[in-house]
Structures are given as C-alpha cells and as structure tokens.
Amino acid sequence: MYIVVVGGGKVGYYLAKELLEAGHELVILEKSSDRARQIADGLGSIVLNRDGCEGKHLAEAGANRAAIVAAVTGDDEDNLVVCQMAKHHFDVPRTIARVNNPKNEELFRHLGVDEIISPTRMALASIEQDIPVHELLHLAQLMGGEMELVEAQIGEDSPAVGRRPSDLNLPEGCSLFLLLRGESVQPIKSDTVFQAGDKVLAVSRSDGEAMLRRQLIGDGERAGAAVGS
Amino acid sequence: MRAVIVGCGRVGAGLAERLARVGHEVTIIDVSTDAFRRLEEDFPGQAIRADGTDEDVLRRVGIEGADWFYALTEGDNRNVLAAQLANETFGVENVVAKINDPVRAEAYTMLGLATICRTRLLIDALARFTGLEPDPGATGVRDVESHHDHGPVESDGGQPGAMAGAAER
Image 1 (cartoon, rainbow over the protein chains, first blue to last red):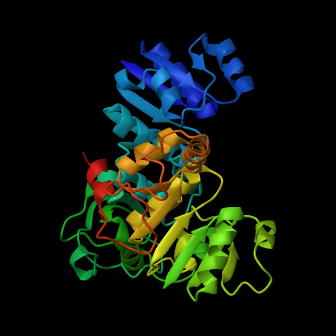
Image 2 (cartoon, rainbow over the protein chains, first blue to last red):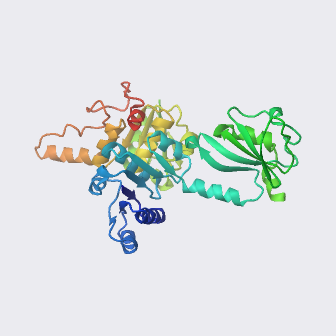
Image 3 (cartoon, helix red, strand yellow):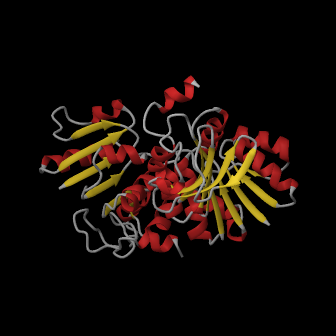
C-alpha cells in the first residue's frame, strides 16, 4: 500500500517506521530541512523536504496514487488542509489527521476526514486510568465518539447504593451491562442491587454522561472524594 | 449588522475600521495585543486578544448570529480552519478566507468556501498594468458560483452546506 505521511515529528517518524516494517511503501513530507535530514539518517531516503500543505508538493509526493494520506504535524490547521486537499484534489480514499485540540475532532469528521488521531485525548485517558479512584473513567469511544464506554466506581455516598438498575433515572440510550464486584465479574440484571465498592461498566451517549454520573456517583465533592480515599 | 474578523494585520485592521465607521458592529481578534496598534485609537469596535481558530473563543466573542466572518490572519491554513468553523459549526453564512497560495485558494473555492487570494490579485493587477489580458479568476472575493467581484454584503443564497456535500462525496 502506498502511504503519504505529512509531518516528520515524533508521531510521523515512528508511524513511518512501523509502516515500513510492515512492508508498506511510503514517503514523508517534512518542511524543516534539519528534521528531514534526521529522518533520512534514521529511515533512509523516504523523505521529501517539502511543505505538505502545498498542492504541488502533494502532487510531487504522488498523492494521487496514495491509498492513505496521514497528516500528523503539530498544527491542526495544517493537518486539516492536507486531508482536505488529499481528499478533494487528489481523490485519496482514506485520510487520517492528528488533532491536537480535542474540540476540533467533530469539525474534522464533519469536513470529511476519515480517521482522527488525538494524542491529547489519549494522554488524558491514560492519566485518568492512572488515578486510582476517579469514579468515572472513559475507557473507549464508540461510533465515532457518539457513544462512550465508561467505568463508574460506586462510592459509599453514591445514590445507587442499595438500589436496582430500574430504580435509577438513567439517560436515554444508556445501558449498564457489567458489574465488577471484588474478584467477580457478572452481568448486570434487573435484580442486581448495587453496593459501595462496585464498579459498573456502562455504555452511554456522550451527552448523557453528566446524568449518568449523578445517578451512579452522586453530585458533590468528586475531586475531594477522589483525593481523600 | 455584525462582523467578526480574525487577524488584525493591515488588511484586518483596515477592514475593521471601515466597517465600524459606517456603523456596523465589529469584533476583531488577534493572538497578539501588539497587532491592535494598527487600529485607530478611537476604533469603535471590540478588539479581543485570543486564538480565532479555537471554537470556544469564537463562541465567547459572539460568533453565533454574526452576519459576516473574515479569516484574515497571515496563515492560509489557519484561515481555512477558522472559516470552516464559522461556516460549518456556527452557521455563519457570509464567510471569507484569505488564502495566499493560489493552488489552495482554487481548491477551497471549488469546495464552496469564498476565498480571496492576494497573490493572484496582485499578479493580475501588475500584468494588466503591463498590458496583458486580465485573469478572469482574479477578481475580488471568489466563491464557487460567481466568479465576478462579489461584495461581502450580498448573500445570493450562496451554497450553504456546499462544503459539507463535497466533503461527503
């Protein structure tokens, strides 16, 4: 498969390295000549010292025969322009953009970027997972970010303690499906009664998260509780 | 009428002054406070130091309900991003992006974004001064349908969602 990578920073470099090792044919466009030289030293002559935002440079890189164009520079606006040029000017079937400001993800998708890589979101997610008692963890995004897989920690003062799923006022489209209690993992049924210390895996629409949080975790002192326990 | 301008360079500042002088409500944004020195001291509009490619910033300065949006920073790609945010996310109908690279300007015009390309305008002016034939594509703000000079005021039903359509192609 022929792949054009725009941006030879750390993300671009290691992406290219992995793709080359997997047997793909690729070229990196990197506008800084120093950086381009470093990449060439590491990976061989697969670098063009060009600004990939310019149409003529994408053409020179053979974007018109690329199966994928991946724009992974540190600037969202550059990544957007590369993907749009690739898609509409060169008919590239698949475009991938690195998005640094998570707020841009939706716009990029809306504008036709096929795949979003969000280092900021990934870092946030792993920081969350490293904090032991943060009661609502984001585990994954589903359906292009519309739905989320979350893990909720039921605390002592959670309004869900002693109640069953049907007693809770859950947001629309939300489903509680797995209970982690001590060493056991069990499906959540209609007669499950929640206890303090339980962990609940749920799928929820992203916009229903606040409501889900109130039902399973409660209103107040989230940060205080997390630090205190 | 309300206008939001991103980028307080010579063009942004000059346009802001002109629109404000005739009574329009103008907000101009730049990442550098220094840039606002280009405005007259009695500039009647609002000048806000912020990043105009950030969705939250645009919401905060009241882009919702603006009649015109001009992306006039020195970075073509920043202008493209800001303009598409204004148009697609906030539904501003009259949006213009300054794109100085003629290839990119052409590509985005085809995608339904109204663009102005200084490079092409200057080349055309100088070529005509030299006695050459005018370049029919180098006239003011261009959008996908009308290649004639097209003041910022008319909206001519100009293709809302044309870009979304193209993007889903």
